[in-house]
Length: 434
Image (tube, rainbow, N blue to C red; front, side, top):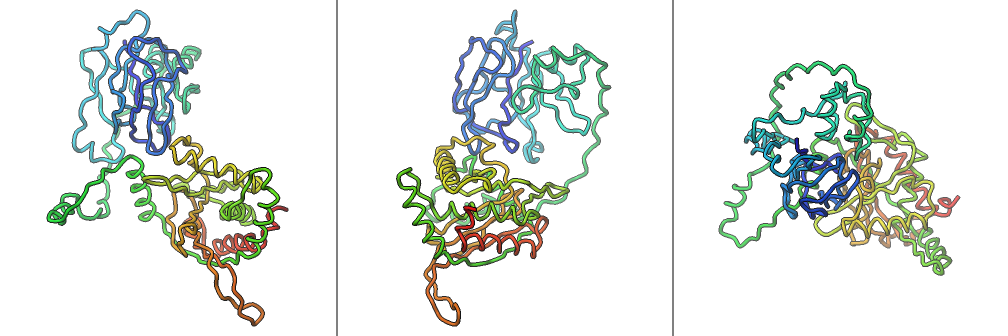
């Protein structure tokens, strides 16, 4: 029976994508590991590898198609002895019911186009989580009586493929699970504001231009709305005097000029935050639903503005890296972010983020926490400011900072300790080299 190739989930948060380009054509022989297509997610363009082998019998989704839901059939793979005439027996997607379309993260239902039985349904692990396996692997497992919960997957993201079940020992398959009980009615959703129709009517007599939301903008809207609705933010504000840092930076840049290295103030901020997270380890944490997850390394995310949105690439183990290494890595991540060439593991994770708008002249602002981070530091511009030192008024280069904190993870005193440690490193920059 022909095997469906499904739209893959290329990141944990991916719900749909754009099939940007097919790299194979109908009739081509495909082996496991071959690159089939380029898929655009909300943040990046990634290559999609085959997990089964056979001949590409039919392409179901044309390249350039946007909004393709995860697990939607995009092509059909034929095994030896099968022909394109057998494709009619493959399951075909049917439109979702309106109730399903309105449900969050609803998956499209599929119905057989002919009397042939579809591949076995995706199994569940012991804890109820879904086990990802190719249709061919599920079919072989069912025929051999193999419990997929006991099979380790070698495909992308741990997916179980044909080779995994062929080498597994047969065993008694688990009895079919009871039909799931009807889920309780969800609580009424919080008001989402006026509908699109209401807004359009409001401005019907004005000249306007509609801008369609792309995947990135939709994701930003969803994630930040979720953050403000579910994360109990509170804010801590401090200023740091940058005079010593600016002198030290000028000296280092002069010495590093022959190597083509030029350190920015942001590089020092990244290093200061990374060291502060080591000194206040209880603040190096994320909210994990029903628990707090404390990180050992300082994985610091930095917001990068790109056309139509932003990325937050993560500098991992930042506490161990030199200023020049952090500078080079940040430049590379920022350049690839602007062309959407980052892989998901490069912009996911971390416990802490930095958003620096000082370069745009913004003096101070409050940033929104990026879940599941415990905090984000909003950095303003350095401003020549009169301050009192030893009873005398002097002018210093002062930079304001606001630490947005998730109160579920970090309490006020702990957040104050973290911000104090950041200021200490910024005002004594030479210590960051020790």
